[in-house]
Image (cartoon, rainbow, N blue to C red):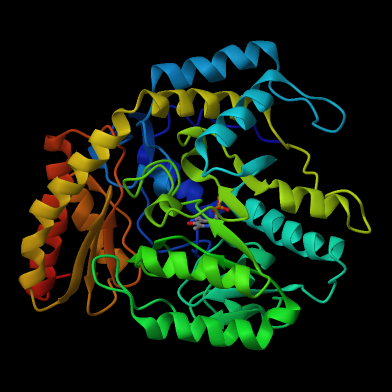
Length: 440
Ligand code: PMP
């Protein structure tokens, strides 16, 4: 074996060269021609690149790092727990970090969600939710109820089950046709968050439920914000009506709040906009403040006891790293920071600033729409962006953003300062201007 070099003292170019010869990045080829940047460290809302440049983070590392990077309390939670134990199996053993986390989640989540399954990642939390719903109906002597009703433009993750719930066109179904379970798809709601309820949306959903409820276990949706499927914000009354229809047609409601949970939309959970409690709730991403991979699937007592009545008598899932103590511990620290309550004012301030500073982008011909909800700001173009040109342009402007499809969007850490957020909005507005001129 050849001796390995010190990768930490390597130049940015060398690190990137070696990365490209070895690794895959999300949704990329290997090797890839997409732009790639080496990060030395991150602090608060700044990413320090190895080549000396500094970028303001407009992404919270994909909705996760809500308190910013290198946070003293979050660091301490990991370090202290490391000294007790990094991990023990959860089969037959338990520990304070897991029990504290479950207690905190039950306290914070919409009332009635009282049982917690701790999983490894958002996609796995969604798989767990699917299995919970199917096992629940087995316990009710309705084993035919195995399929899911989902929304077009939804996104629920990259594992096979989660992928099956995601938009069939943008969700890669055509690539994996033979192995992706077939689900039932309702149209994406056209009732916009700031508009009014379009009754046709509800009628379409009800028609599908009427036709398919006898072989469907649940309706699965992202409440209020359809994220990776298009960053669309829909009307709370749609969610309210969907919940009522689930009750009428004997379907469970699975709410995927992996992206929206923990304050991002201006409410602690997006379900609160409609004042509903789902039967099953999936959480992830910001759960650990972006420190470690952890997710949770919560359910009500009806679902939990229904699963106990199923033929299996137990819930059939149990990952190796279930309830990892380091991850639970940092999640507890993150939830303790949220409990202080500053996030509300922070998210409101971000929302006002995004509204004020992105509004002018609406007037450009290349822009289809500009929308803001909570700490989410979206510019939708009429045509898809070219990541290879727009990403380096944004980096030149000192902003870390990751556009996709027709969308240039931001969901910054809640602790971002007005000046830092201005770097992000200026970069977005400049990119719109360059695009209008045909340069990007
Ligand atoms: N559900 C939603 C709504 C998501 O946004 C994501 C991740 N983007 C997932 C599920 C999957 O989570 P993970 O990437 O942690 O598997």
